Image (cartoon, rainbow, N blue to C red; front, side):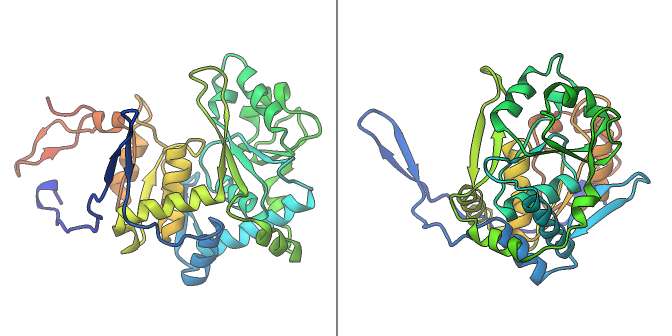
Amino acid sequence: MSPAVRPVRPVHIRPNETTVRHGADGALYLRSPRPLGDYPVRLTDRLEHWAAAAPDRAFLAQRNTTGGWRTLTYGEALDGARRLAQALLARGLSAERPVLILSGNGIDHALLALASMYAGVPYAPVAPAYALQARSYEALERITARLRPGLAFAAAGAPFEAALASVLPPDVELVVTEAPPASIPSTPFDALLAATPGPEVDRARDRVGPDTIAKVLFTSGSTGYPKGVINTQRMLCANQEMIRTVLAFLADEPPVLCCWLPWNHTAGGNHNFGLVLYNGGTLYIDEGRPTPGAFDPTLRNLREIPATAHFTVPRTYARTPCSGRSSSGAWSCTSMRPPA
């Protein structure tokens, strides 16, 4: 169906109700007169909610080696998060011994992040580029020294071997999904996933409160070395309720996203991942990027997945593959350049 004849329907968005107050110092203070709705104590409360309400609904999907989609339902996600939470607690991980995630977006990354929050163990997803593209590992070394992790995770261990050998203390357990590094001992991810949740998992979950640290996001380091920014459970949950208050259509039907934005940044890891989880939607993990040579997977995914919303960076729209008008008058999408 061409863009010219696609059906259009209204979506529910709250009107702009911002009030403005002028400060004596010339500053403007903007505030919503609408009180914020109730929000959960923990972001994983929404995982439990959807695992009960829609256990067979797809929560996450990721391309497998054959080009199909590996999916994880809400019921499977809760079960996996609880199993991994048991494994983290058995290892004595805590706010003093958090989890370091080195690899990018992926289902196992998501499960480990959810398990960390479920158990009250902070985690830090860092940019894979610090290990895979950096000329030196100084930034990653500083992050590791500041975080003092008790466990590190890389989906594929071998590509991270040089960086890990340089920065990872010998007492930090390395967990990998596949391709274990030859020179560093590692634990298979499935070994953690095989744990059986005990009552200590529920006790740990109950100890997690609004001010519990959920994660630490590190800045890009554009003004120096990366700095860790604490994200609490209250921050994540209140932010999602604010988003749904404005983008009210999120409550009308579960959102479907196809997104590449990295989870080591707020946009991808807090806004988009949280938006899907909070509202019981489905997130298709896009392996593409809006860069030369990496955009075709994104186009393939967006043509295949009927996303209900799309969040990205301006560069994506600059690379919209339109070259001219078809016989119907709509722009045909055959090249990598927008129309002049």
